[in-house]
Image (tube, rainbow, N blue to C red; front, side, top):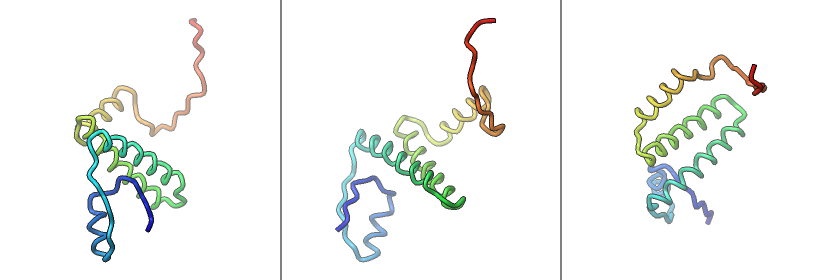
Length: 110
């Protein structure tokens, strides 16, 4: 019997039952949930970096977005509030569309 010890999407237990299998699970306490979400984000990021095809990469990005939205809620914001924060930062500092790569900054005053 494989052991997973990881956070899974809400419908996974139902899918396991539908396959005629049994599993053991528990509901995490708030702090455990926060830590599990952080670990899940790392897991999804690793899977993104391992993705060989664009479609696989997009699916991993979608998974990361789901985890990020859950983390936003843990930190007291909903998806719309998080997107507003993102938009505000993009307005103030720009996005990443221009592909600017900073090499260095000379800190000497002129």
